[in-house]
Amino acid sequence: MNEPQQPIFGIEKIYVKDLSLEIPHAPEVFLSGEQPQVDVQLHNEGALIGEGLYQVVLTVTVTAKAGDKTMFLVEAAQAGIFQIRNVPENDMEPLLGIACPNILFPYARETVSGVISRAGFPPVYLAPVNFDAIYMQRLQQAQQQAGPKIEIAH
Image 1: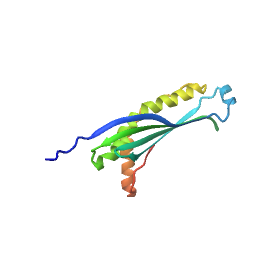
Image 2: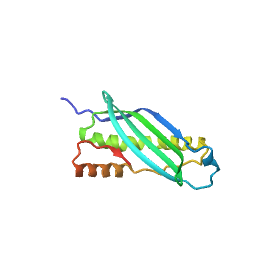
Image 3: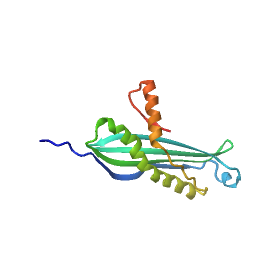
Image 4: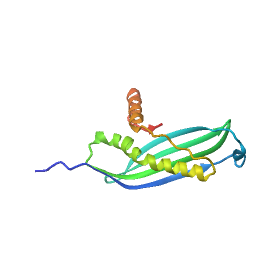
């Protein structure tokens, strides 16, 4: 008798796929005492890269502006390779859109904070993110638009 196989979920590798820092108005921005307005954007996508292997990339973009001048812009693409096997098809999108970004986010937060502080600015600490809520919001939007594919972005 053929028994159903147990689901497998494992982290194979976590890495920084891409990282950029721009300080377009240096050195003037360091002389300004103005408090910057900080904007944080998140984008997440996952793709099958091999038999039972998925790459998930969580991109965090942090922009700080003082008035109309950009003080800095940091974009970090934190990626992971995950082994996912024997998981029902309808559970794959939540895994790739919620579970994997939850694993990647602390690494992305550390990368962004470290780059900003090494650039000479006070570190920016990213608040925790509720990927469950983001996923559900995107799912509802996709159902309303009757779109065939869900892309997670915030």
